[in-house]
Amino acid sequence: MDFTVSEKMKTILGMIREFVDKELIPLEPEFLKKSMKEMEPVIEEKRRMVREMELWAPLHPEELGGMGLSLTEYALVAEALGYTWLGLYVFGCQAPDAGNIEILHKYGEPWQKERWLKPLVDGRIRSCFSMTEVDLPGSNPTWMETTAVKDGNEWVINGHKWFTSSADGAEVAIVMAVTNPGAGPYLQASMILVPTNTPGFNLVRNVPVMGHTGDQWHSHAEILYQNCRVPVENLLGPEGHGFVIAQDRLGPGRIHHAMRWIGIANRCFDLMCARALTRPITPDKHLADMQITRTWIAECAAEIQAARLMILHAAWTIETKGVKEAREEVSLIKFYTAGVLQRVMDKALQVHGGLGMTDDTPIASFFRGERAARIYDGADEVHKLSVAKRILREYQGRRIR
Image 1 (tube, rainbow, N blue to C red):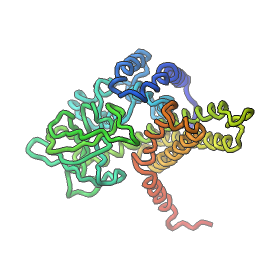
Image 2: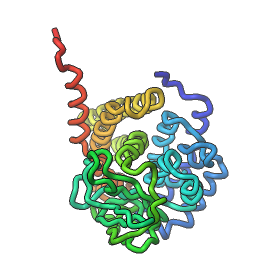
Image 3: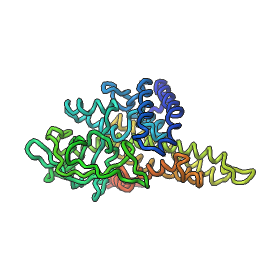
């Protein structure tokens, strides 16, 4: 694997970092106090500036209006944008839209792409992904109770979902529902496009996460589907291929998340180091003079670098060998990077003391929003069990001397 960053990418990353520093970080205090709806005018102005700089939608293909970066190139961009809450959204590559755009591009019918794909890439509409259910484990996408039954030329959808991120204000949901209950476990579910203004699509509430309810893109909704009817042609991809499509979506998506986490870890690390150097503990000593603080700083630096290199290797593996061949690498980065992020955030908060518990720095908001990193897209324990099972399979029948 070649770790060389091209001159073009160095320029792009330099422009992004400067924009984040000058245009987005100053907005954070306001972002933490106001709703997304209140912030919309200023955020849209920043998005306009990004488009003028020709840095819009770095992840998506050029023919759709994006920059067409490779996965490894985009990983570097996600790291730079993850430095602030607003980064990915302002640059048009936020979840869940990024993953939805990928599967619409790969599996969507021409009319589906015309109606939803181009407006999503342009940032004119938003979408959500409705898979996790209230009473069933989100880490097992082959087991769900939401059903979609054909009635003439319509699907009738019934079910109860939650953590449908960004559903508030979204125009369309991609819903995973059981359409073929008699098939094998991996061929029972399908994905169906459901406009959110469809009767029977009921947004019950935005789910509070550690006290933060949020709104618009910055929220997680509970959705009740009650005899929600959409045309049969709203099926996304082949019938019964919901699990397969989900895996296509989640593989690269975990690269996006993990490198965004590295951006957050970098921000917390920078804040921690600056705080350690300036926070006095006696008239002639600072936190940075304490051995335990220096140990934390060294450990965090090593873990961030290790996680970063693992993610870039996983991205390279996906690009050169495909998602299926990179399953182990993707699982490793998912639980390892999430753990690194937790440890770095926690140490940064500890170094800040009482200040770290407030929203006077972004650390507390990162902690609220990203403690779930060890849960969503597969809990740590699930990924560890999966990796260990594959590793042990390689040792079956082998004699080790």
